Every structure is written in structure tokens, then in C-alpha cells.
Amino acid sequence: MSFGEVFLRDRQVIPRWHTYPVARWLGMTKPLGETAKQEIQDANYLKRVWSWKDKGKVAHAADLVGSALVLNKIDDESAIEAAKFISEKRKFITAPLLEIAESFLRLAGNKPFPIPGIILPEETKNFYGAIANLKKRAREYPRNPIMWLDLAFYYSAIGQQDPAEDAAAVALSLNKENRYLLRSGCRFLIHNKSSEKALALLRQSDAGRHDPWLIAAEIALSDILNISSRQIKFAKSMIVSDSISKFHLSELACALGTIEFKNGSRKTGKKMFGFALEDPTENTVAQVSFIKNVYGESINLLNMDRFPHSFEAQTIVKIKKGDLLGALEAAKNWLAYQPFSSRPAVAASYISSVGLGDFEEAKKIAKMGLNATPDEFMLKNNLAFSLASLGEFEEASKVLKTIHDSQLAESDKSVLSATRGVIEFRQGNSSEGRRLYKEAIASFKKQKDMRSEGLAKFFWAREESKINSPDAHRLYEEALVIAGKLNLAEILQHFDKNKEK
Figure 1: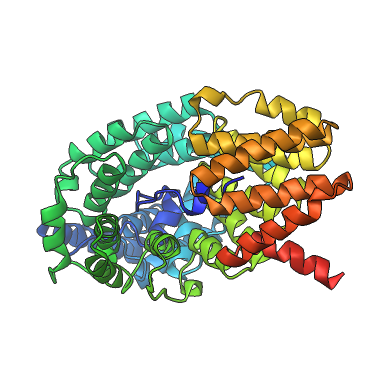
Figure 2: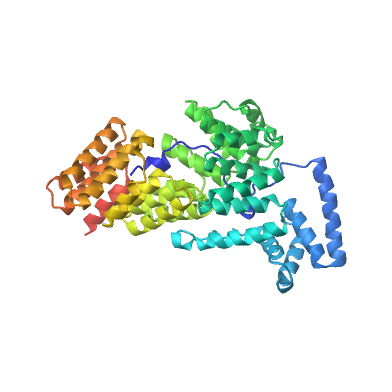
């Protein structure tokens, strides 16, 4: 069960995918600066303000609040007043209009949008409720691309890829130049294993040639695909420009900094990360936490409590500090925040099973993650490991039968051998269990993966201990030595608990 699957696996600042209200609240839809077009929009906006003040009707309030959302005039007192007026008339207006008004008031009050506490598989009805609401709204406003993309978000969360693809296709057919739609569509395509199409989507847009958010996405995705980016030179010139705020440039600097680190230019990379952290996005904080964890660099991270939804970064930092309960809570929030992604589900199921020994919780989380990513090997492995640890080895065996060994990387095959070892031990086949564990450990040593070697020895020792084998003590000691060298909280805390007893 590999820690590196989530926390050490290659990462870049590919775009986050949020529902639109969350993206707006996080500042990801803010305009880059004043333009002639915006001056015209502002003039039209003032007309709506005066119409609302003069007429005072729901229709005029709705026009004003809708325009304020589009133009990011979240602090405008007239729009806030209009939104409150709509909210007070809730008995007489449509649900979509009330939702828009209340979303605006939440943004104006700088209040975070509540993240659904959806972890257990049986609670996916909350996703279905959101889908039903969005389908109704899409029928009322069929040319609103944001609603279609939000619909794709929730379909992806429950693994319904065909309707997700249809909804995303409608959204992108309606608008291929909007930053939010392009970044979200890009992330959907990556999730759908169509990264080349995602890159083409970014490169074919006019906005992708000048918007730093889209340029950051193009550079990050090109890096992941090992394709030369067309934007590196221009991106570097944008970083030294004073015409764009540092918040808008944060992910761009972070993408460049990651490439510098991977190319061995750590001094330049740290400089880029320093710039990126001056006014960072949540994704920037997560990326810098990843770089700090992988490369061991002394990059000063800001207080993450300042950053809403910094759950991925919190997970990394807390597990490094040995706060496994805090890390699990952060990982579960990360899963609720990005329910279509396998990474938070793998992290949460790993922490709860390996670190905390809460196999029931790990089982539920792994099943939740498999809703959205049914072919994810590490989630299947974590589920099988948890089932076997609970004595449900027949169910564990069924899960493993859905894994095709020939398609796995060597590191994953080693992890799978160790998990099969648990099942063999639990079925009374200790000799076969030992063979599988020995095979896994030999492979981990060959790969110079000391962390996985330590974990395999620890859980092999657990199985030997259950049958009162004299080998248990030796294996525990070997696991403890590795855990001490690498400061593996997920192993060390088990020994600390035994000392307390």
C-alpha cells in the first residue's frame, strides 16, 4: 500500500474544477484589468442600478444581481440591496432566482460555500439531488453553459461518464473562450483520460494566448504530457510585468517553478514559488506543499488557515507532522471538494487504514472514490486491504479479481503482492502469504522504495503476530528501523500506542 501513490506521484498545477459559485468565491473568475469593453459593461451596469432604484421590482433586482455576478461587482451596495430584496420575496419567486440571490449574498459577505459532507457511498443521494436541480434549471436556461458544466461535475462525481460527457460538450459548444469554462472543461477531459484533447482545447482558444490562468494550464498540462509548451517565453515575460495582479499570475509562476525544479534549476524554481506565494490560490499552496514534501526544500509556506479549501495542502502537511486524525479530516474534505478525483480518496483511505487502523472508514471511503473512478488500481487495492483486515477476505478476493496485473506498473504489482499476502494469511495459507510478502519486499528493495518496504514488513509482522509466529518480533523491529529513518508517522504511531498500553 504505497504512500507515494498520492503524496510523491508527479504533480503539476493543472486547473481545479469547481462548481461556478465556489470558483467565483475563490476569485478565479475575476477580470484581469480594465478594458474598453469593460467600460461599456460598466455603463450598462449603471443603467441597471438606476432601473432598480427607480422601479424597485423583482425583475429589475434580478437583472442587477445577475449583472453584478457577471462583472464581479460583489461589493456593490445596490446589488447587495437587490439580492436581499429577492431573498425576502422567496415565497413568490422561482428557485433558480433565489439561489442566484443567495449565492451573491454569500459572496458579498465573504462566506465560504458549504462543502457537502459526502463521504459514505450511501450518501450519494446528495449528488442526485444536485443533478435533478441542475437538469431543471438547464431546461429553463438551456443556453447557460455554466449550468451544463456544473451538471457534468456532479455526473462525474458519481461515475456517470456518458451524461457527464454530453453535458460538458454542450457547455463547451456554447462558449469556448470563457476562462472558467475552459479550465473546467480542461480538467474534465483530463479526468476522462483525454489529456491531449484538453491541451488542444486550451491551445485553440484565443483567450489561451493572453490569459495567465489559461497559459498556466497549458504549461502544466504540456509538462505532464512531456510536450514542449508554446507559452514558456511569453509566460516569463508576464511574471515580470506590473500590469497584472500577482493573484492572477500565481499558478503561472507555480507551473514555471515546478518545471525549473524538475530541470534541476532549484534556485530559479524557489524564486518562482516565492512569487507564486505572495498572493496564492489554493492550488498553488497545494503544489508548493507537494514540492516541499518531494524535494525537501526549505520553502516557507504561509499559514494555510488563511486559505479556504486548502485541503490537499493540509493533508500533506499534517501527515508529515504526524497529525493523522487531522490529515484524515483534511483528506475527507478534499474528497468532498473534488469528488471526481481519485487522489483524495486514495489519500483518505490510506490514512484511515494504514495510519489509523480504521478499516471500516477506509472501506467506505474507497467505495466512495470508486464511484467516480471505478478503474483506479490503488482504490481497489486499499479496499481489498481493508476488507481483508476486517476478515472479509472473500469480498477482498472478489475486488482483486477485477484488477488486471498485466496493465500495472512494477511498483503497483509489488503493492498487489503484499495485499494478496494479507488475504492468504487470513485464509490460513501462511506459507503462501510469506512467499507473497517476500516477493513484494524484494521488489520494493529493487525499486529502492524504502517506505513501501517498511510498510510491507510492518503488515507482514501483523499477520505473523496473529498466528503467534516467532518471526513477528523481528519483522516489527525491521519496520521500526525504517520508520524511524524516514519518520513514517503512519507506522510510528502504532508503536507509540503499544507503548501506552
